[in-house]
Length: 424
Ligand SMILES: Cc1ncc(COP(=O)(O)O)c(C=O)c1O
Image (cartoon, rainbow, N blue to C red; front, top):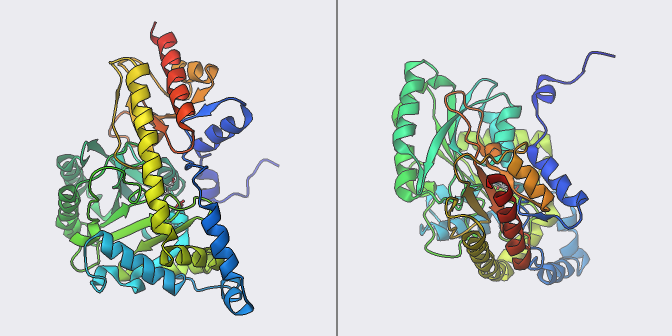
């Protein structure tokens, strides 16, 4: 039969590029994947998790609640503990409006929340502002929903505010501002560039969005994705945009227990303005009417008995060493005409190749790297489809999350060999 029964969304949704990269890593023995966003395997909290689970299931009284359905918004204790911790990180009193547990929802990873937020805010053809480059799975969601992306170039300390202003002005002039709903920032040790957005830039962005709201005719939200916030291994934490949102009505904050505890558990959370929370909970009600209760209670216990905090400290040390090894290997193995950042948190090093060297999946460099048995995430995959600029094609994301230090060094050395072949 020729026709397809798929919906527009079903037809529109492209295969996530990362699926192919992950498959490659599994089917090619000996391949070193500096592409995967997986976390450090040996430090996953097996013992702590076993102890908590044994404790949870010790008696019928303790075991029954986690084995039962929970609520759509999520476990009350976990929401309290998480919002208190968030207030602490931001240096604000737990009773401040922005940190009320009633504003929080727990989701199946923060990925689910990003998806639900897209569903409740955007119609096909609506506009989202994204960092250039941005988190490619979020770009996948926006592509799937038929959104138009406008990208804002990055500087060392976050988006270029002058460019943001020019983009808002252009949308105002073209009459498209009513289609703009949100600015999405991966504001801590970003995926893919490792950049942390300063407080000043967050405040500046929020101010600009507010200034243009009257022309949009509705709120324009700042969606702050803080997935890597806790993986800070040097310097000070930066306050979130929640601290700048006095009426607690313009900032959406999303984060996760995946990266700082266990990626397999996939407990994410978000703080939402009231109107959005109501809509998001209704949609989540239709998705799954609540995140796995058992796993929420596991995290809740890990936070309250201190295992979580201890684990975060362990991870910070490990990632600090891995990041240093990757940067050192880049310095030793790549030519001085290549550039990279030195991350102080997160999981990624963003590398810019010498002029003229392309990095996309069809490039000579990618083929040479594969021949050397290493893969990276081509940088062009992290750039939104934005007709107002050409996609750069000379960067790559290297992850130091899952491979051992030895493999990180070997992987970068293989990349260096591949690069030599391409530019010789
Ligand atoms: C920037 C960013 N946001 C959100 C997520 C989603 O993570 P999770 O669904 O495990 O919370 C990821 C995962 O890699 C990410 O890199």
